[in-house]
Length: 460
Image (cartoon, rainbow, N blue to C red; front, side):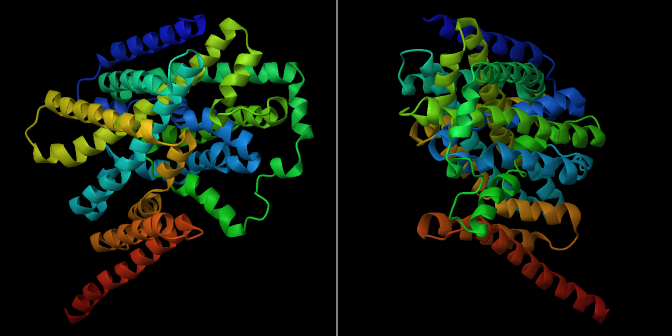
């Protein structure tokens, strides 16, 4: 038991205790899923920031910067900050005004229960992969602070986050996110301060031009557009983000807090990226790129300050993984199971949600053990089904054009093209192709849906 490991475990226990304490206020499903729709500006801003600022931002983006240079970090922090900005400026207010419990509720309200269930089938895998990424990253943090194997630390991490999430719901999640967001910012700012104070930031000036170019040399403009579209359009439909927007106490809070979280995300997200880039010159030969941020922090920070940094990483992970598991469980429980139990009491409804969260926690654990990397998991989470849900959500919120058939056609076309293009053929831009296919399928089907209605109106 090293001092660092002891400090990390103590921090984890404190977060668990805070989560259990806040969970005593959870009395209804509304409390459990959307915190009673009473979150104010600071809480919404920090819970959006902390939830979005997960393992891929700390461990994944630093590792990708170390492996591939700046062009490997298009998604994080730049793309995901753009996603938060898009949500705040365009989608936050319309979503809040619908008084939803989950994003799938929008599809039931706009297209019917059949499309609602189809949306759940697309949204759940995304959150499941996101949760698995955080559990795997948690294992990396514990592994770097101890001599335990990755399999053991991932198993321990999974047990902690499942217990933590089942107990609290969004109300506990939002309160702990506020604390975790502050610790996260403090830990990363500490690392940045030591990097600049030591003069090691000067290593960035020694990097060749191709390693500090945001666009990969030789990549076409469509390839660049693909790299940006996945995190922005594919993630703006994430239930983790939507859940926090609709939990705000007013539409003004939903919009302003999300835009502020985007700015905070970009500023703090640059720190892991810069650490990874500087390590190309300062620490060549690191075998596992995903541990570059942890190893560099160990190099710069003395014992107590490294405990603070390790707590920051744990904060980033816990604040994201509990949200992802809560989303997976709530989509299945609220949109698939509970409609079949119309007479269920509030206590029973919360129990169904908690059982679902625990079940998806176990699935995320299995996925975390088998995945090749954190960044791979998050990239797949953002891309799978994202184009279809984005098209259906956008038309559903801002247009009366199209009905159930248009939504189904959009989903089938988008998912079909992405699956074929990614796994069965060598399609160069599968996400853009799925986005185009989804949009065209929606519009074409909407026109055919509308034509009989116009003929009937003309005959009348």
